Image (cartoon, rainbow, N blue to C red; front, side):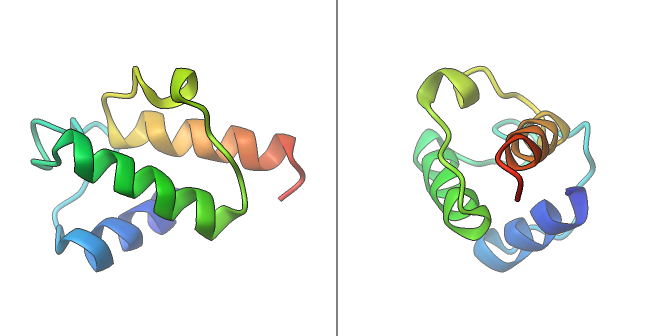
Length: 77
């Protein structure tokens, strides 16, 4: 999941130095709008739907990977 998320961040935001423990806002410099856009991209790419409660407390790339992976697995994707 991390490699997929890394590829999305590279393609969409030109961020190449990415680690699972990086803070999405502080370390990657993504704004709230960027995060919402990233959520939309991930939902479309994986065919899943995340609600605000699921992603509103995300802080790191690894947390996002874990959340998306768990949801995709739960939905059988």
